[in-house]
Amino acid sequence: MNSAIPNRARYVVIGGGAVGCGVAYSLAEAGCNDIVLLERADDLGQVTTSQGAGLCGQPRDSVERIKLAMHSVATFRKLQLNGGAKTDWHEVGSLRIALSEKRAAEFERMKRFSDEAGLETEMLEPHEAAKRWPLMNFDQVKAVLWCASDGYMTPGCVVKAYADAASKMGVRFATSAAVEGITCKNGRVKSVQTSRGSIECENIINAAGAHAYHIGKLAGLELPIVPVRHEYFVSVPMKGLGPELPCFRIPELTLYGRVRGNGLLLGGWEPKSLHTDPRTYELPETPPAIKPDWSVLKDFAEKLKPFFPAAATTEIETIARGWPTFTPDGRFIIGESSRVKGFIMAGGCNAHGISGSAGIGQLLVQSILEKSPSSYVKNLSPDRFTEKPWDWKQACKEAQSVYETYYGV
Image (tube, rainbow, N blue to C red; front, side, top):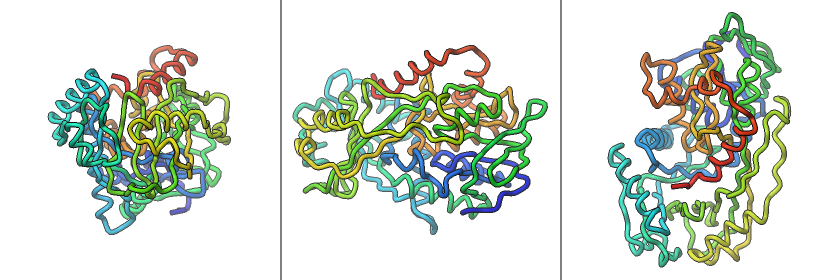
């Protein structure tokens, strides 16, 4: 995968995580050529992607978001069946669990949106859900939304599958290539400078995750892309857990989970989030190290205890934590800047970077190749932040709120 740095390229993708690799794959599938992807680490998917939980849920609160997720699932299936690297996609379904009538009503709305989008879902009675997750106690449950085509994958495998398929379509991947500068002239990108040489280019796609802010600054753009801490744990193998069990989400407890290696993977959204300001570290540096927050992790287990008592007493085997990026309005930042032509954003993924990577790639392709993109795509433009004033302190506060109310009604 470590190609030589070319002198020229039509498209330069910066960032070798799930989003960057998904974008490169999507561009190639759309018929674009002369694409090179740059990753400063010595391999792909080594930073935020490597810490992903791997769940992919399709029921959402809008038809557009559902179709985005459906496209990702279809892509994971397709790559899983291809002759190359696999996504490790497991279509085990998912249970979305409501503990109140208000949440049950939300699930009914999500089902209506799903019906409109062509996604098959079903409202289950608690006893029906118990058949799918026998160790779970559903006595307090009001309603369950079941989606049979949901599932989980291994994030690192998804990255490798994108790269394998994209490389067969001519995409070049250059690792150990740190971006050091971007040259613009007359309001358009001209080249990107790396630790391994310069590339003249027509388009630069910023998929740099927690460094997307810094890449934007190299092009003269200030964008509110805020890294927010996220954590989960994986227990030691537990009796009765197997890879065939569905994923689950309990929004009122802000919890999600699945089986990994016959252990319980359990994560959640913190009511008091911790963010880092990207202005406090430079492009060559890494974001601040994250120490495991045991009080938060134990709280996840305690919340699940009434439904799965063994969660509170099991031994933890692995802890994962990272800095997924959030935006003040909770929408992706996708598309070309009107200020700097050829500078294209694929960032601020609001914790959907891995599960939504193929859909994000599709949206980016639509934003730059379609003459009349949909209003949904237009609303993701970086121009919404560069063409009007905003305040960093307020932007960080709002981005944290997006994280903290991730499962809000």
